[in-house]
Length: 83
Image 1 (cartoon, rainbow, N blue to C red):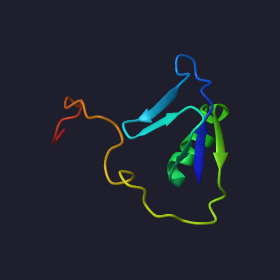
Image 2 (tube, one colour; image 1 turned 45 degrees about the vertical axis):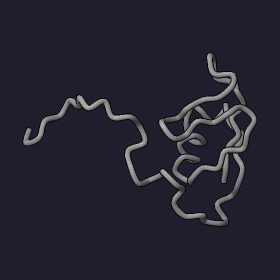
Image 3 (cartoon, rainbow, N blue to C red; image 1 turned 135 degrees about the horizontal axis):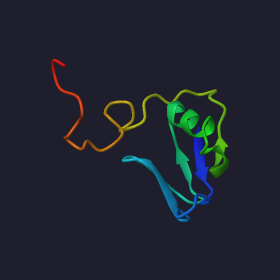
Image 4 (cartoon, rainbow, N blue to C red; image 1 turned 90 degrees about the vertical axis):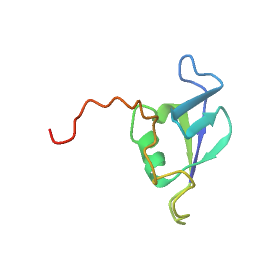
């Protein structure tokens, strides 16, 4: 499955970044895993994308997807070990 960003989000006419490894250029087909597809399809972002695919074929884990945290670490978390 894949998505195509329409370029319709304010201040993001040429592309939009969901996180550190999902930058979608306007009008280009961007292959995505099922989790990302649903994160876009079932949220307020849906109107800004065209959705391609029907989940009839499973392509496995995408490179860089599902193996690490999808956002930059600030190194200054709010939690402390041991409470």
